[in-house]
Image (cartoon, rainbow, N blue to C red; front, top):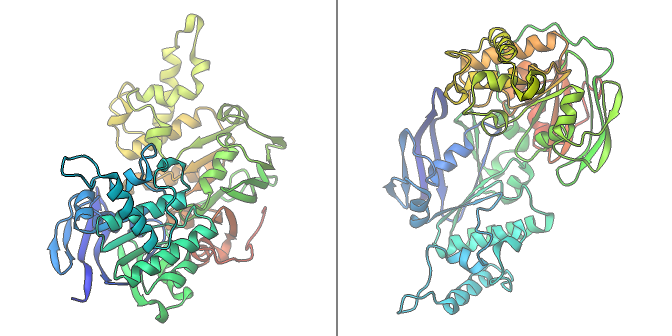
Length: 506
């Protein structure tokens, strides 16, 4: 039997979006097989299918040479497939020992948990991995993230895992913790365990992997022994030859930046961030998992306090202690998760659009001026082409695209000078995405400065006048004009240090 795990022609779609298109993937005994690709390439969807969190629409999975249906994470664990995430899923209040044996407790003949045998087995497991085991009785929540990951590896071995999936395992580890993890992965490989290793850090891939598969747009674009490929080839396959639809723009209008960020730092999230943003400009921010883009946006908006650096907005130095202060100054923020942070789902469309100007609508005795609320809502529904049965319709019943337009309308109600958009088209259909793109371009052409964070490279290339690329909390590239290419952006996003290109206003 050559493969411990084999996926054949896996398809998966969400609504009208095809996430996986006939993916083939194999894993051998005693092998580290790396899986790489930019955001949205399909890596996470494939891993969720292998680990039982999702079922494929079509395709077959073979485990130990036999066809299997992995319909739950528990089923995956029972047959010998375990997953270790970058932020470990643990029970913080329970002890390390309880976390390891949860669901597979060792019991005495009388049905009680045999703590002594569990501890003996745990000590033996940790010793086989060359790890300390003095913390077995401590609460899991008191351990570092690095140690929590090691506990989950031990738990996988208790379940006799033959396949262990590592999903961005070093994203928040120290250098020492990363080295220790690599040592353990090599030991597991030598013991015959098959390892699937997902990371955007290409330098790690070349250190730890035996084989690498590159994904893009839900398809496998290449699969190589690690010794038969170089970094440049992987970057080329990740980026591809994108056909980017152009959008008509009138260009940057301002000659003085509306926003100037200088040396902004909040360890360990971001370091020495500096850039300018002009009126009428769309400044795109691109980066892979853990790059720090959203953290920077939240610091500007008053959701996160930086420890050093300066922010100048509209000609004066500012330090917003809250989002309310940022809003009053003229900054609006459309968050990544609109359903949790951006909307009041059970409230009406009219309420959601006008909530940012509620104080202006309240008359004496705290009564809302319903006519003003209606006028504001109708104006934005008309301008943004929001499709809703009426103003009283509850927002949760609208489509994803129309929900996003409602969030946008909410912020436009305060007439901002700077609009921060975090993943503005995530989870919406193609037609709505095109409408949102046109709206964003129209707002910029009216002089609004826009900071747009997106994980979709085609969107970044299409919409941005300039692109700021981040990797592990630092800016690794700024591109415009002919330098604004998919390959340059991917190189910078994967940590290949580059000179700042096209750095107007940076």
